[in-house]
Amino acid sequence: MISDSAEQSHVDTPEASDVWWKSAVVYQVYPRSFQDSNGDGIGDVRGILQRVDYLAELGVDVVWLSPIYRSPQDDNGYDISDYQDIDPTFGTLEDVDELIEALHERGIKLVMDLVVNHTSDEHPWFAESRSSVDNPKRDWYWWRPAREGMEPGTPGAEPTNWGSVFSGPAWEYDETTGEYYLHLFSRKQPDLNWENPEVRQAVYAMMRWWLDRRIDGFRMDVINLISKHVRPDGSLPDVPAEDGLYGSAFAATVNGPRLHEFLQEIHREVYEGRRDGLLLVGETPGATVEDGKLLTDPARHELDMVFTFEHVSLDHGPAGRFDVVPLDLRDLKATLGRWQTGLEQAGWNALYWNNHDQPRVVSRYGDDGAYRRESAMMLAIVLHLHRGTPYVYQGEELGMTNAYFTSLDEYRDIESLRFAASERQRGQLNDEELLSWLAAGSRDNARTPMQWDATPQAGFTTGQPWIDVNPHHDTINAAAEVADPDSVFHLYRRLIALRHEDPVVQRGDFHLLLPDDPHIYAFTRTWGDEQLLVLGNFSGTEQTVPVGPDWDQAALVIGNYPASPATGGGQIVLRAWEGLVLRRAPIR
Ligand code: NOJ
Image (cartoon, rainbow, N blue to C red; front, top):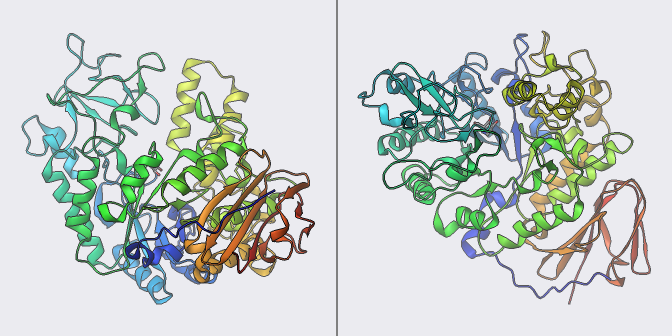
């Protein structure tokens, strides 16, 4: 039987309880795939302007825009060549000013993505840095000679054995000066050297420039990689080699010794003394709960919240993100539960299932076949009822599914294409296996165009889209969802409204129930004398949940089936993929 004590203390500090983002929901726009306004097949800022009323109807408080800065687009804008200009693909600075205005008029904030672990190799800083060993900007990036005794430019001669996230070595040999530069991502994304104070000041000046333009904050890309584990003599350590010559560079680059110092400096130099209402959220692969606590404790003045990767890595097999294995719900509950309790005294969670790097959650942790609507809604209910700030990725509110591409030609993502090329070279997967790995794990699953309507290109473009539209847009699209009061869209709208209004949702203590149940996700949220019970059935079969008599008379707050579930006698029978929230008050 489920029982829960209401005696837990309320852990909000007075300082933290007033922050606006505890009752806010963020919506991520991936501009390239959101709305095209000029028929070139690529989404743009004027396209987003056409859809601001849709965002207002959904009720979100903040829009986070993936990068639109000037960029060669090697990694779809995560390779920036000018931080203070907009890529012509997406529009102009004037368009962005108009977008800021249009969003602010509707009470929506705008948060920009900021990629400062690395720049593009076409950024003028890097052009200078690579030009000669004594250029004043040489030390703005990580340059190193070949390994001692090795012929520069030959395999294994790289300064360390670090592998890039996008396959292959993380060092590129540059003939101009006969040295290597570091790139944790593609070779067109050289890593900035944050040890150099001039680099940091240049980044801060640029951030201030954007805030002066009235944006409302930043989502900081792989921000916990900016401090490398550099030895006192300036050398960099090797890592355990996993795959022949190279190993994951993460161990040597994640949460480095100066990370907290740098983040506190950002806060001081950029945020301190500014207007209220700004947001600073960090993407932190590899961060543990302990790291999360340090990074988001308001007293430490680092970040407001961070994106953990732990709960979106639980279906990764031994070979990583493309090697997808079934999720064990017990792991998901344990992982999210750890972050909930870990950050309850100080700090704050960013809650998400999807973003532009993750396969669609309904295809991943739900059932995108017979129970697509139900499972998309159940997943939304479970996530949004946790303590933290929920993030909705474009199309998630429609229950959009994975792309299920069947040929390599359909893929655009650099990580997927590089993985395919390196696997082909290794020859361990046959073509069929390779395609099925990509179909399950590729980032392109999230990047197919937003499905606005049932017309041939889903209302996304009048031209040829840069990546194919998901064929399901004939049935899964915003026009149909908005028109149907029982749709996934309206469930999201109601969840967002609930977060705005309900102090239990915003602040209530979290308590995980039934940790060992393989099908049911269950927890309570408690605030004052009110308590919510959240249940999610992660299976396609009926499940009887022993919740105890306290909940027999409880009111249904929100659910994903039109009729209330069967309750009574201390138990609730959940239908396939059912998700619901019950409220009881007062409790003693
Ligand atoms: C994380 C971003 O979300 C991803 O899309 C990008 O490829 C890498 N960082 C490199 O910037």
